[in-house]
Amino acid sequence: MLDTHARRLFQPLFDTMAYALGRRGIGPAAVTLSAALLGGLAAGALALGWPVLFLALLWLSGLLDAVDGTLARQGGLTSRAGAMLDIVCDRAVEALVIVAFGLRFPEARLELLVLCAAIILSLTVFLTAAAALPTSVGKSFHYQAGLAERSEGFLFFSLMAVWPSGVPEVALVFALVVLFTAGQRLRSALGFFRD
Image 1 (cartoon, one colour):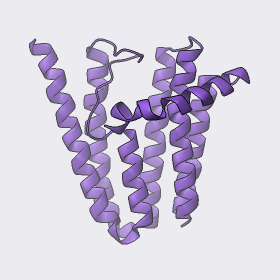
Image 2 (tube, one colour; image 1 turned 30 degrees about the vertical axis):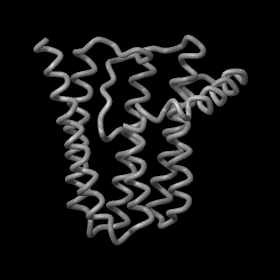
Image 3 (cartoon, helix red, strand yellow; image 1 turned 90 degrees about the horizontal axis):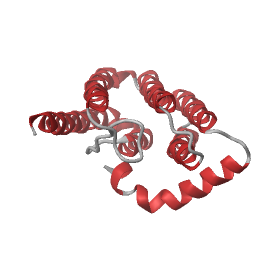
Image 4 (cartoon, helix red, strand yellow; image 1 turned 180 degrees about the vertical axis):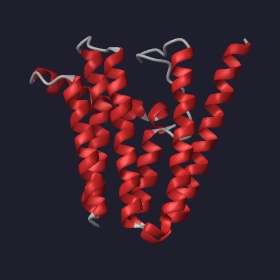
């Protein structure tokens, strides 16, 4: 929801950063991979019990993830390969962060497994709709907005990092929000085929 509706507020920052990176000869794939590396480092910081470093690295990773697509569009470098790399790197970061939470908070492993299952289901709906429906404006594939997008996931991860005793409950609420989003996207996609 935030990625879709609040992006316009931050787009000038993304544009400026993308322009600066492009002028230095840095391509979108390098930014995507840098975002993934920072996300992996964030997961490591979390597993070691350094929540402040985790938060800083996680959100820096998210910032670069928002800039890579802008950089690709500015340079006329958008591609299906770049979109695929972006999706794979995003999911890798999320998986590593959830594993880090499981290592740090073993009492929440069941709830984190439920969250993983919800994400798998939601991602399945997202990707099958992306493959079956017409391409979205400004995207390499059909992008369906929903209640839980990447920024909401980062907010949930941040809440879990700053409220350790609430990790099991927050993970379950996160899973419910993700499942609701999967339902939203499935209903929307099926509605397209009925029209």
